[in-house]
Each structure stands twice: as structure tokens, then as C-alpha cells.
Image (cartoon, rainbow, N blue to C red; front, side):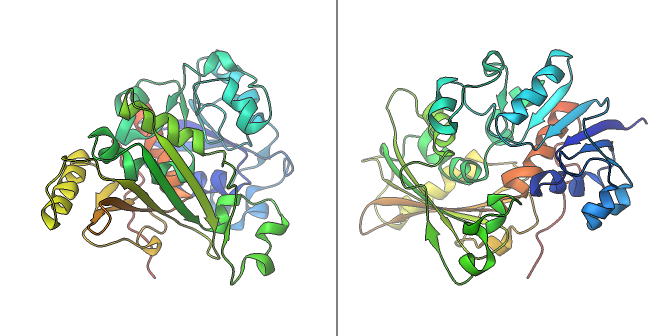
Length: 346
């Protein structure tokens, strides 16, 4: 059986490196090309020693491949992928460049005009649990952001079933790796350690993804979503606490209503390999290093408010792992191939 050839653009960032780590033991693919703008011409192992077994040279541009992952920053990723899409190559974009359907939103949230707006309607938003059939038939997949993955999966069953009102709050905490590998003052050890900070209170760039996907599930009623991210002193993980008023008359009163809510979630995610509805509030350690999303829905009986806790590893289900899940669908492989590993504990 011949192996499918894979190229990774910008392997030197956290997400690109994590794609390579996951694919190293994938039985159906071979990484044939990796690029890195500042490290071209060096052996991969000299830049990222844990990837030395791949035995590859970092190149300035991707070699011919059957599927290409791009972990470039926004704008640069679309510019690099547009010619490959024109050639018919399957691509998965791990930046934000193809996540939103409205080109004007990129000017608003990313401060630039989209370099390839004609491709936005062609791109499929890559949450397999919501768009599995579309991903399987796609040439261009937009891998979701890490915060949106946790929020959308956490809220999708309640929003689609009309169990919550329109006013939704998403409070998310992320490990520092979500900020990327580039050095900044805000992610400096002395700044992050023993500290928790809220940021982007005026609107985070991931908010329009959350709105786009949840609104599509809701239909005509306009949702009012507040999203507040926080940076906490750990390397990996996202915990999202989601709050929304319980829609009147949809569920029974008291503990019976909470059990009905959990059953709605169990039914929605029945048969899913990577989304698990759990019986106690999950912790980020329980998803660390895995492609799992752990979800705990309940009802605050005092206030009549739905509370959903959602946990992922931001670099796996929130990034590289979900990208490999999408790749498996696009190439016709079993969806969990290469992603079967359990979380790392402690």
C-alpha cells in the first residue's frame, strides 16, 4: 500500500510541530516536505530535536504532495495556499484565513483585506462533529481556532435544540502555548507565572467563528454572545465555562431537567470518538495530549441557567489533532487513525 504524501508549511511553530509529531506514527501517510521561513536549509532535528526521527531538511517552500497543512500566520497562509488550491491539491489551513464566510469580517477582525476571498465559500469549517460530510468531500478545510472548538462543541447541542436563550457567555482559560512560539512580553515566564489575566475584552478574533457556527445552528433568532478569554500559567489546555439562560418550558424543573439536558448532549454526540459527555466537571489534565473534548452540561437550579464546562488540549483537538482528524476524512481513512492515544497523566 502506497503512503499518502504530506507537506507541512511552517513546521517550526507549535501547531506545525504538533502536526508532525502526530503524523510520525500515522500508518497511512508519509511526511515528505516541511518548511520554515527562518530556518530553511537546516536539518529539522537541529531546530526541533524531538522531531529528529523524521530525518528531513527544512525547505523554503513545499515539495509536491497529496495534501498540505499550512501553519503559517493569517494572511500569509492564504497567500501560500491559493496557488495550491488552484492546482487541485488538498489543503488544511490551521490559520484563521478561511474560517469566516464573509470577506469583510477579515478587515474588521484581522486588519487586512482577504487575499483570496473567492475561496471563502469553497472552504469547509473543520469541526467534524458538525460538518463531517462536508469535510470528507472538501479540497480546502479551515481548521477551527482553539477557543471556538471548545465553545462551539460545548454549546452546540443546547443551541440547536433551543434549550437556551439568546444571551450566551463564554468564559475561557487557555495555556500559554495558544499564543504561539514567538517571543512576547505578555507570554514571558516572569509575566505569566503566578498570574491570571483576561484580555481582548473588546472582542477576540475567535468570537466571529463562535457566532458564525452557533448562529447557523440556531436559525433566525440572533444570538448575543460575550466571549472573554484568559491566559493562565500552564502550557497546554483550554477550559471553557459557558453560561446561558434556560429556555422556558423546554425541560422539567429540578434535577430531572438537568438529567434531560445531559441526555440531549449524549444523544447529540452519540457515537463520536473524540467528544465525550462526562458525569463530573472535567479538568484540562484529563484531555492533555489527546484529541478529546470533554463536556459537562448542567443547570444552576437557583438561577435557571445552563452551565456547560468544556475541556480540550488547545494544540490537539484545538489545533493539530483536529487537523489530522479532518485529513483522515478528506483522504477516506478511518477518522481516528493516528489519534487513538489516551491523555497524558499527570
